[in-house]
Image (cartoon, rainbow, N blue to C red):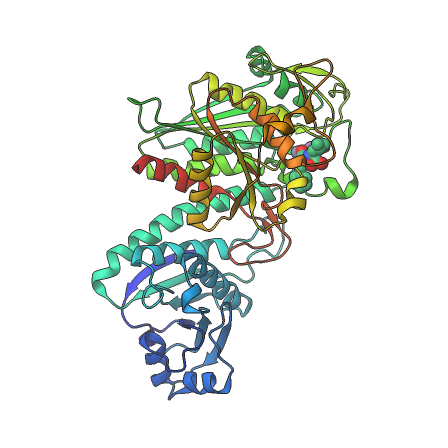
Length: 500
Ligand code: BES
Ligand code: ZN
Ligand code: MN
């Protein structure tokens, strides 16, 4: 989709539609909405008076201009209460309007920047939110549909009245575009069926992401994984014929200061059948998305490579299927991770922590001191938080706060759960150092703590995205399917750490 920034008066545009807005409770429209109201001989204020336009957030009222404007259609987008308005609202409103017009067969329109005036957003912030909202809201996964793209929005003109602000709008749009395209890459990978999105394909995408940039890529195959002593990861991978890949992308943004680093680790289970502890049919249905954490860290590197922040970022993705093949790992097996710790397999379906254990060892051994892992780790996190927030855990409160703050600042909600040492007895083993499962309660916490056993002296945070990685209906900026959460947080984290 084309997004152009143009100077002028939106009411004078000749486009299939123009979009203006209204805060809830406003009876006398001003600014661009006022200009459109005047041109329509007061139709907008009439509709407000009739109660047909309320300005409630998410409301889109379509008016036909009947020759009074060059554009046939006018949409008045509700911004909600002005005191509740923020950049998230702006993103969601741009997304909602775009989908509203797409279903009406409109293929392009002109819009003002929601929130830049009375809304109180900076011009560049409002422009970034617009680009993100448009690109994220219009995303759809239709490559396997024969009639794909029948309804599509091809071009949106962002109209800025003040010529002095154009450069800032352009700048915000470019930043928003880079971030949203990274999110859509993660979504694309998460939506792709497991017979296409194999570990090999993930490694190819990592290569695409690094191509033409300064970033470097390392991909280890099964024998190299075994040689490095990643027995925990290799154990999960031994039940599948599909070649596993250990994928590492490096952005060396501050090579003189190796301690200025960030490790982004992502669970890359391209299909989770459960292994010999096989899942139910219903439980297996969305398990093509069990590589979403890995997808998000690879996709975040796409934006990080473009922004080139002064920080050394490592993206590390242990990618494999978890299958009950002839050689599959058995419940009761003992595996040895790269740091020498032994793990008894309590359940082959608790495989995420096993692959991340070796990813964490690899990061620590390479001197990474600040780490975030992203994983569709447990069903239990959905019981605790639903899809309202990503669960956050960690071994250092300052680092957890930094990660949660990055999430909040981009509108990807995060909520910390406790990691009290008393939970650790849940996963003690009679025969090995630890077991990969805990007891009945607090499954998301024991899962997190088991990963944390491999964090060494690093500052580590864990994001359990099992319940936030997919949505079952179009909501806000997220169309049904893979959400790409938390790509925007990871990009924000890397860039904000670099500038501080
Ligand atoms: N990939 C699943 C977790 C999951 C569940 C993600 C639902 C998305 C939606 C993970 O590998 C898993 O199977 N976890 C088990 C752990 C248990 C065996 C200790 C679970 O949550 O049941
Ligand atoms: Zn899994
Ligand atoms: Mn599993």
